[in-house]
Length: 205
Image (cartoon, rainbow, N blue to C red; front, side, top):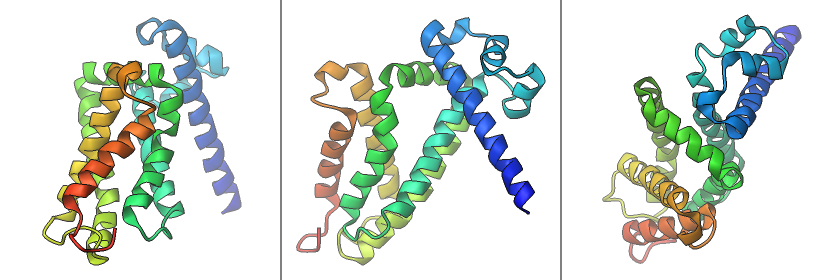
């Protein structure tokens, strides 16, 4: 059992190493100018090893989105004791947006490449659906605690929040200089606007 756990851990570490090396090359040279051979050379691995983890070069980009889902899962668990759901969501999205805030150029390039590929767009849509499902229980909890109006459907609220997240993200990426602060602050502003519209009047914030 221990050997199997160590083996899986090594696999995750190698996949992350391939991912990070590929992103570094994409950032330095541009996505189109990087080959799989460039990535494997940087990692010191054979091409066959690369294909064990990523069927195509495009799938390296999907690893970013899947990594964000993992961050979301971990953050939801880490902040579970925060009773005020709006405050908890701010903490969760701060964790989620931290890497994006540090690497805006990389994220912008990644989004552009994803939009160019119909395969990647379909997979990203599936990740967005998973994103919404992970956030839905928080709105169910907020409704039960009287923090948001019970007339709202929790899944729809989750969908609205994910849309708000992407709106803030794209607004910031389009022109960071005019976005009035970092992406985390911008998202928090939009979240407050959304929350003010769904809050239960006279209920707990």
